[in-house]
Image 1 (cartoon, rainbow, N blue to C red):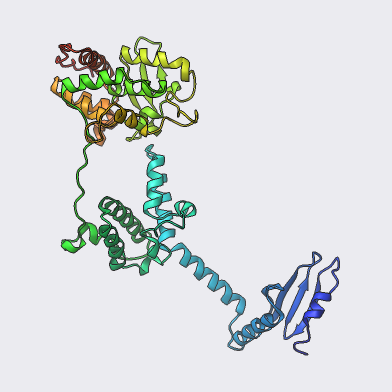
Image 2: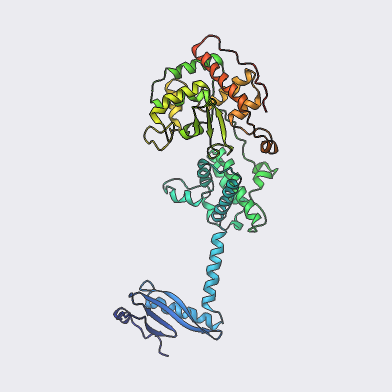
Length: 439
């Protein structure tokens, strides 16, 4: 059999036919010319008594010279009784397994599994938690949006490594880098997520030891992160000063949507995100017992939160309804009606009224209500339920469906009347009487 009989000129000059054409070079190497004009390198050979064909690339991306080199390499394997096609499949499988076992791949798998478990338990992750976790673990969706001009992600050094090759020292390097930059809270959050990923890798048989566990269980002080500083949301809790704040809010002049949100925040004391994203469809303002039902998907506990509405709240909402109702967001953004009011809108309004971040925050309205309601004698359970906190253990929550709405409705109306009293000055109405238990 003649070898190396083809030339580039011959390959380029071949006429396209309505049927595939083969141009042989020798030792099994040929160019397959398709009716489309595409030219593919192929090697025909025999192994184990069977005739087989091996793809060697596309001409001219793979040159004639390189195609002959590939043929010779395959022939050398055949001389050693190795099937080049089987070897290629084995390499592909090995590469696939390697890609599936990088830290990044296992982190993606863990997060998908974690999200699915939460959704099955009717406690779906919020969008903010999803985005935060994608950043903390350097997941694909974050990496796709990453600005390459930014500083390298703390996990970039280990993301594409096989997870079983990552040691405690590798993780320590990540954490120490954050510590040097005084990113202590980030370090705590990151090691928590990283440890979960490694725990999942152990559970799925990818490795036997969790190298990140030392940062949680070790008694060695070198493995410990500095404790997190406790952050409290600044809040005004002295009744006289609360009255001053309410008068400042009442006289505040700004965008009507921001004004309404400002007025309602102290009366409702829900989480800022729950108020900002409120929709008109969630409110019943016409019945004898006006109510706001915040859907589970928008609450921190991932359970529906029912908010009884005082008459003052209903009045403010009815004033706002012609402006932003009857459908969609109650507090739309000033620039885009499909997006909620900015998180900074009320914060900025507080600053314009002269209240610094060390003095009062939007979230601080919850602290104000909690503190004063307790001082005024209301039950902790009612307050905690109204704050949307979990009350009791899992078993109790599973059987206790009452929500104590009648008691909470009395408390919320009394709280609104009390705030009105503080706002106008003088002695506010007493609301010390505890609500009678109704189960």
